[in-house]
Length: 271
Image (cartoon, rainbow, N blue to C red):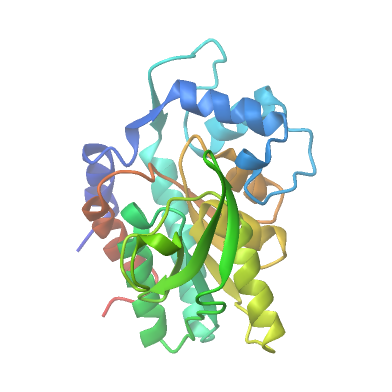
């Protein structure tokens, strides 16, 4: 049984929280780009507030536990594990509510190399509870702007979790897929679901553009985010994202397994 105390120790030991691998420089750069309304960092959120760098720094200090001192400009960033645990409770509560009403759900990740197993276990548990795990627009093309220019990807599903892959990456269904922050995949998926006459998801679970893009369109969305991704936390602060769990999103995939067990237990979805 993964108690809160045991999970807290794991979060720190695996560097999911506590001192994390994300650097202060990376985080501050993202806050500057967000303040400048760079779409690469907005990842689907259209902020209502001004959200200048001091505002973002204050928000991320409150929600993640990073240093609020603007003079702190280097070294590793920090996530308060207590804030992670609090958010995981809220995250599990949303899953429990969705399972209780057998709501249709959509899960997607821009971090398939790291987080696919986490979301796939949630998909399995929600399906077992009677939720329809949606897979709209499978195989559809999505043109995503990358640092190498515009690249065509295909939307795919692995164990009920949406991801994108470049067509040359191999046969459909192979892992791991491409890393992306883009909100375009979730927009394509939701457009396809609507065009087909539904059902539409009552809950979207994911990260990056999946949670921001869905939340901006008015869908209930919950997910994980690192300290260098302010958009989900701004979305949460402005009421478009329901729950964001502060956690390093790029550690070894096996380190997320205790989070899975803890969340499913708290959501009353353990098998």
